Image (cartoon, rainbow, N blue to C red; front, side, top):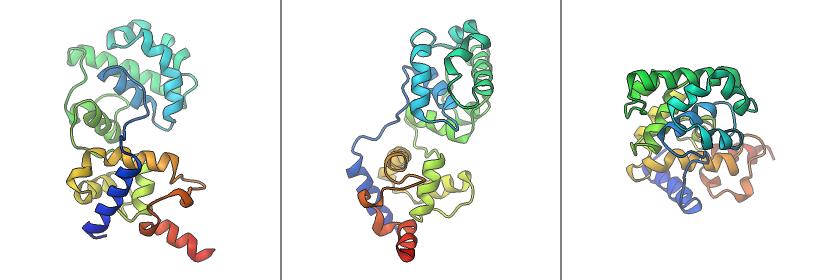
Length: 213
């Protein structure tokens, strides 16, 4: 795809979503990290519902450690894979206290060393918490990148690399949120609302669907 077309895609997305930001609710860097860890294979709405009361009382690593594993589970049991996620939250909190002075590190590799944190989570934290230019690839970003022919990568890591190379510089800081929000509310995995979409002229998925109609 040529640069002009990619510019048009992100220009239209920016006009449709003028203030892109995460749907996750948090009140500091630590609760952001915990929310993103909990959001894996879950919706932001589910996470927000579960963490509303949790973060109101327990918003630091020390407080979560004092709460303990059995204490945190009742708050997050409505979230998928809550047992393993709760264990990861306790484990990463312990590491933050012991190795990082209870602070979320502004370092991609250090973030990836934390339990439950992969490239996507680290990229989200680096972008939202610290303002770094990153593109986190979740299911929405992966799906839209392929539908719009922004990347043909077979893995999230390859898609991330492709997007970092092809997304125009002026859109790199917002590209992650633009693609996520468009994928969440318009270009859905099932029953995408193509009639409302401004990107159909560039969409490989739409062209293929039109052929078979």
